[in-house]
Length: 410
Image (cartoon, rainbow, N blue to C red; front, side, top):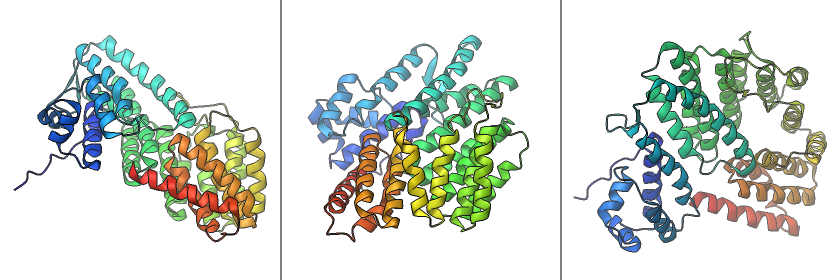
């Protein structure tokens, strides 16, 4: 009887993440470990050990596997993070072989303090880069950070442990953004973990921010009742910074709009506009997680509410205004808003403009590997399939079909 392959756990470290990716692509190409080994001039046994995170792959092996499996750069994207993790092994980290298989730590206190400081700097940098280029390739770094934080937290003082819990919560929330592109269940799981860490750390602003993200996920599932309940639960917290409160009011307004309650929706959006310009942020957090919630952000979601309320012309006007001076580095968000703008034009009967904006959004979605933007384009694609006499619509539908097929293959 054939042996059942060991279940892999890519979340445990970068090394585990690479092993899981290697197995996925090897099986996708229909190759055995021995067959892949022959292609890259190593033994099949070594391939197996790399897949199970029992051996470090060399840079040459990673590049050879990339060339043999044609992964579109996914395997070589691990190179820098694997090298970093290997260096950490040499200065005090080791890959634990115990039950959880996470990164073990044998570092002195000063080194732990430096690591705690660097976590938040790296998180802010990745979040900024993610909106510019997409989140592909960032998961392994985030997994390594969470693994290190978990181990440090188990041996830290109560004060330091609270800081580590906050770091874990923020990294888990960041991973929810990454997994939201392709795996909704994993995205929800990371948000549950983030909420647990934030509550355990007694960080009410961060816990409220995670509730906001869970409300956003409920809206993605077209569950306005759950979205409104989660937003209200967080709004009941009296110690909220202004921008986090504004984000929650935006989610609340979207839930009201999805439920057809225009009066409540407008009231929530108006209040969000009032507090979105606030410069305050809670000192419990090392970075301002609500910094992106400015008046432009609220306007974008006001447009979305108009679309949900069946006012596509008003929505299109708002989207056009805000996209005129849209920051070039916010490409992921631009893909979403152009997707929504295309839907607004479809619903207004302007098929040519809808196809043009949908094509622009598709280009941005492909350039940032945004599965979320592809999903937002689906209503436009469905509507434009009914327009075979419009060349722009036909061209978009074909391009969208190809893009979704490529996304499924990856």
